Image (cartoon, rainbow over all chains, first blue to last red; front, side, top):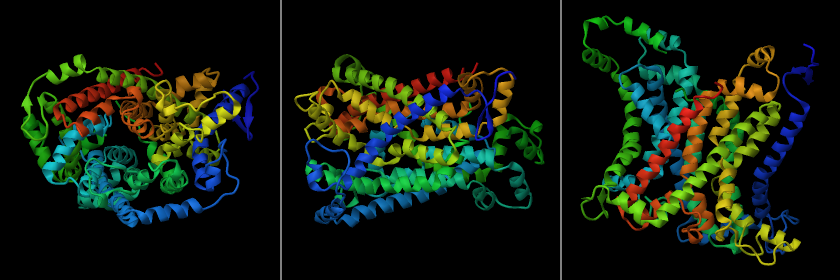
Length: 291
Length: 318
């Protein structure tokens, strides 16, 4: 080759011009700032003392950081007529039970759809894929009617039970199982007389750890961030996110407390993602759709 | 897939040739009872809360129904009223199409190009950069901070900044000004849009073997753009399809961000989408038949866009 090969850390780099590298770095930096600044501003607002929140002209960064907003948040919480611990309990209870159920239901169905060949299988999976193409708002009114008929309006069931049939979770799980659980190992287990439930739980599940971790995280995040719902009217059954949106609705006087609440709410999904990033990316490796 | 399953079918004593198609199917159903048992819990709930509601919406859209009296069949009246008599609905369609046409492709290409660019960083840097781009999409209601940044009064950071520089004399109403509300909501939507599709693209890029690129270089690929078109995109086509589904669904279902930041309804319906119209008639006026017709229109738009884009993506790299 006549052209001199570029190297990066002693490895040859193909087809990468210096100009392109510079352009990309600039683009990524600008986008990164756009993405990061609002997040940083929330953190700043959360630790600003009152006089800095009310300053004119407003300043982006904080000079005398304080934890007073977090203390205010807890005193605001103790004033609410439903004990604040109830909102926390609701969100934790909904998140954990919904996640547990979706893990069980989705992985079991994913195993059957990926690894057993039976009439109707492709048809079922096809509808599930199609269901990713529209949002649940489309069926919201009809769902409300169904919930009323079941007598589930204003109960935990209305939130938890539909979450068990988590279509995206099942989809990711099925795709991952298809490429990561080999048929040979299942066949030999079957020949040894293992039941399908045994091969599913004891053989397949340990092989798809990244997939079920991802399912747990997605399901948990969705439920954790659940706000007001048309199915829930009683204050005692409402979620943490709803309670916090009420604090935020208190306007500028509560700007600090509301920023503190936002920081607490977002810390959970972000920490979970940081810890499990490599597993999620591994799962996404098989997320592709074949036509 | 099918090859391996043929083996297990052959192990079975009964041969397929001896049976009609229906008999064979019935035989297979009985043999795989346990598979149906395993999909049943999911499928029952999925049907009840996803499939049946859509079918019910379609049926109810031909009726007049207020949840108290039995639905009355009125055939296409709801649709006629929607398209001929409801100016706000026409506005909602227009806004939804603008939102979808801007945020859908933009978020899709943002996800793709950012994923492509950060793919060249070292693994540790890549993990940090991925988090920076992905965090807004998983942080729940953190987007409300845009309401603080673009607040109506002089304490809003943007207004304060502009007032201080003398660019404006009076605070701008941002989310409550019909000239700005759409644009701002689109920016916020894009800010939260680097989600699952983005991660899927990152994973897809990491999964492409280095040898493909080496082979392509030997074959005469001369720059990164040719590499993208001829090697990268065709190899990660399944991810491109998956990402497109998520981008389209998200961009048509847009509404929650607007309600939270610009109010319900937004000023002069400037950012009123089909989702809002649906909420208004379904959740507040209880005109269930009419609301169902709105839901069906939204459903048709989402499915139509998905199928159209699916066809277009099938041509990538050809």
